[in-house]
Amino acid sequence: MNQVVVLPVFIALCFALMMFFFKKHRFAHHIGLLGLGAILAASVWLLYGSYDEGILVAQLGGWRPPYGISFQADVFSSLINVFIAILAICAYVFSMDEIKSYRAHAGYYSAMFTLYAGANGVLFAGDIFNMYVWIEVLVVSSFLLLSMGQDKKQITGALPYVLLNFLGSMFILSTIALLYGLTGALNIAQISIELASVPDVATATFAAMFIVGIGIKSAIFPLFFWLPESYHRPPAAVSAFFAGVVTKVGVCALFKLFGLVFFREMPYFKDILVWIGILTMVTGVLGAVALYDIRRLLSYHIISQIGYMIFGLALFGVKGLSAAIFFIIHNIIAKSNLFFIGAELKRLGGSYNLQKTRALYRAYPFMSILFFISAYSLAGIPPLSGFWGKLGLAQAGIEEGEYFGVAVCFGVGLLTTYSMTKVWILGFWECSDKTCHLTQKYHLKRNVPIFILSAISLYLGLFPTLVLDLSTLAAEQLLSPELYIQKILGGAQ
Amino acid sequence: MEWMLALTSGILFAIGVFCLLDGHFIKIVFGSVILANAVNLLFFSVGRVNRDTPALIKDQALHIPSANPLSSAAILTSIVIGFALSAFIIALVFRAYEQLSSLEVDQVVEHKELE
Image (cartoon, rainbow over all chains, first blue to last red; front, side, top):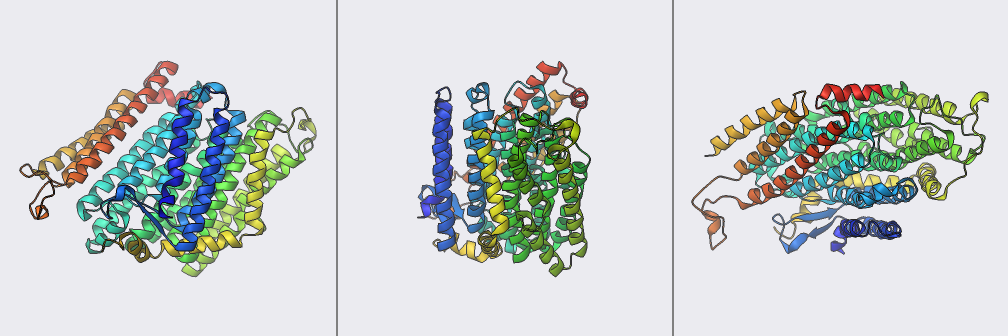
């Protein structure tokens, strides 16, 4: 059972290679879909396994921990991974229509697979250096996807993205080096044990360096400026996949490291993280309110939602963390779906710019309703999925006495509603002079992913119990590092 | 021995950051390469620098002060990654130069604002 932990990443890497060698074959990308199906099956199996048996640990190469590289799947990483796999399938199907052959010939589908493999590796790595390597796999694939193509704008958008991510990587790597020098371990569980005897000043420094390094990659408050410059430039399938995976995985790494390694430093960082969260929320949403290009507007919303997650991390209790985990899942689904729908708005309505596009509602009522579901679940209107995440965060915040943070959460929620209503009115609702006429048909490969993601979003909103229970379990596991240490090093001690 | 490496690494960090802050892409490329090497050197210096004993595990070898092989192994990986990143950055800067025929950061920013 335990070796299943490496299965998703293994399948993804195999298919990445295969797609690269057969990229010019006519049906190559159809076969890739098979691989993603296998990955999803393995991910669900892993989730069931980690729910059933607790944390699963695989030791690569047969080396005993803490010397060998270990892969471990807890409920947190398997849960996130399942939703990332679903999103990967949707983005893949969408790109089968959207991606032109020159991109496919440049290795587009391989890069999709390696991006997934990187995300999966970051979630499951039990060794901190290994985690860094997977972060690089993820980031380099995202560089590729971002800069692939002949578009001038893509290059100017990719430059700041690449340079800032490089800087973030260097921050993470030097932290790992210093941590290794101080504790003599790279295994996360072992580091967690050794840090107990290290002075707080040193540990707090490392935690701060990690926040900066991962913060650059996941676009938290003062470090997010690359995101709105770059996320709207590549094709919509890429933007959607990025929105759901790249930044979220950074946040997940932060959750894992704070839950398991730096939990002793949490009293120092609580206020800092609360403020980072609040400022990220506010600056993100203010950027979104001012814009009319739907892709840029959504990019700013990504930043604002990251703020909620950081706020949940700062509360650092089972309630806060589980709400944040639910929020991450909701976001992976709803935000990516909005990017897809944005692309449909361009195809059907004529423009990404809300002031120029024709309103879709009369000609495409079904698409408009799907937009409505995703947009208002992002805003957190009651029966939809965003509501449960925000409700949990607010409850946890009030329990912890962070009244100001909770008030900001609500304020930002209102502004999100405002901004989504703006999109709804200008892009979908009827205006007499710019109604869209039924010129283009619904398109299977483009609309099935949107439909699936909207259905999941609706499911998360109407029947949240299952995922809420799982995320509570995930949060409990994240907050009990002894369990990890026992599972990973249990055999060795 | 370690203090020399630490000092060198610190100086390299300073040079790297200084170059990254420059307004010319060639300098930024050099800065990023130097920064990557500074981090590698940092990793090297935390693994006990010691020139007499190879890190081979014999009986009771753990009691002899030897250099730590793991950090060297980790550096190999990070050198490769750093190299790949640098290559990518250089390629990207070259593409930007082809399209905008300029290597000034300000020009790229202006180009962005024109859109």
